[in-house]
Image (cartoon, rainbow over all chains, first blue to last red; front, side, top):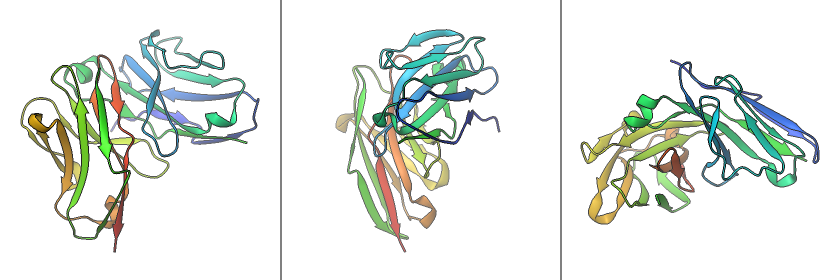
Length: 117
Length: 111
């Protein structure tokens, strides 16, 4: 079964350092999402890509967060500088247009657990 | 705007007992609703979805949910809890282009 790949699985970084997460969606999925899930809460959308274009980044803290999907395939989410409050699970998901039109939702990766110390 | 509210952040049941996890939705259009399960340090796995066909939806692992428009609810149930059901469960509603999630319910199964 096709999967959304994310790396690293776990990351510990010091406050004020830079950190990056990588996501490889299911092959052929045009839409890619980055969600942040703070412990004890539900996932919240940070950014959504359609191919290489940003569809929605209204909740992305742009002073420190950036995301790119240069070739419309894999994606990188970066935080610089990291703050203590950024400790969370960062989840990537992808979907095809067929999935969203058919209301099938989307497929999540296993996430990256970030701890900022 | 679409949103979901999950009632009860923690639910405990005995092994073999009925599982009931509550979700109410708010939507200005006919909603498309989902339940996801998350095991510790894992991503979210789709349990089931409501896409305006049958109001009683069956999912994986013996779970099912019933869409009730009059109550704006989409509660998740399972007749008999297993230890392996212990996890966090999220209800979600489809917005224009993405999903909006509830705050989750942690299910504990007591042996």
